[in-house]
Length: 489
Image (cartoon, rainbow, N blue to C red; front, side, top):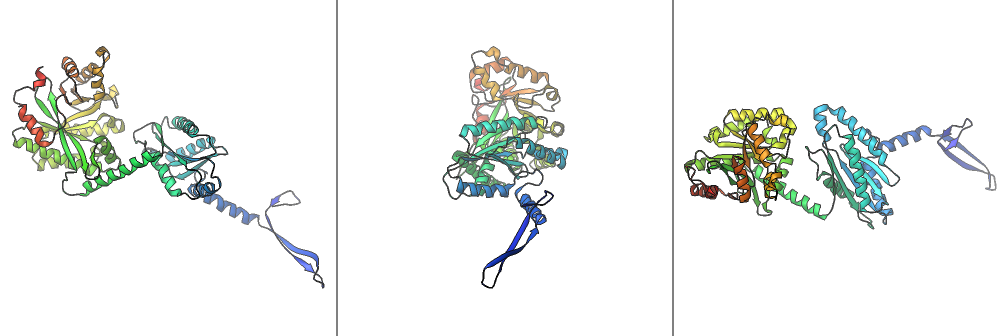
């Protein structure tokens, strides 16, 4: 770079050669000085564009990869870590408010996060709704946690009115390595940042990547593969099967119905808990084809009960919000019940209370249509989800299922502090009957009878049963009048 007589800085290219005399000695130098400022500006612009995200001005993925490749070779003894910020839930805002709104929000996030940058803490935007901090020469894992918590505080204040959350993944890079698969590192970081992301969550949570998480991810992949096989199979397979837990009327002692509980068992995985595979099915949208198979199995069991003379028993089927909001859900369900000659009054649908936080009016309209057709609607996990009283009063449901959490409270020494009776009273005042879930002890049974709970289910009555065992259970406790022995105590 040169400075002109006017003080202006210019990029120049100097070229010259010697002038020789007859003896071959250099007598002088001659050359030319070219102003290459424009070319240098173009090169700088190209370099900047190649290394930076156009919208936020932050470093991009390509630059992160090149920097990591260089630093892993040169800074072997330096502690290095990546902290990934997953804001995929911003997509919900795009749907509601438009693309430009969410883009402006991302720009605001970038500007705010940039304030956390230091000489050993660099910020990148590798993908649309994701940011990565690259840290080196930090002290220890606690420093990573403290920094991540400060990011949570920052992001929480940014998204407080948006009511969405996200995930923060932390990946420490092993020291003293010459070569590292950068793509693998970034994939692992993505896995960690996605671990606790929920479309309905409003918090930011931290997850370290480690071998345990790797095992969980691999198992989740195996579960998804198994669910895909079941979903793609036109025939009803035994890998996905149902068990039925009796629901008993506390006032009459008779069996009111059964809750159909989905189970997954494969040769490779063994028996997979519902709390493990159902969230995966919902996240992958496989809940739609799997849910149809569950409904078919449950309705077939209803017909089997009818063949044995039990035509008043109800079967309750758990329905996810993904199924419920599918435009043709109601029409397909009615068509299936018609084909199988099912009386709608024998079919119950259980809907988790938390779904009403998403699309209250639409969901309420759907369940109202179902009730008008004769189906029995129960709100599951009542008291632990979206418990706005102004909304509860308008729920078009028949029954509230009291979550096991409130039933377990009845085992405490001071029953006067239990609010379970208040929940029963409130549900009744709202015009709903009640079912207590997870009843396992006699003290719970006596309390529920005393405070007027309508129905119960749980291991005190029976564990979930296979089809044949459920029929044996009914035969043993005839519904025509003989009370269950446990009810007469």
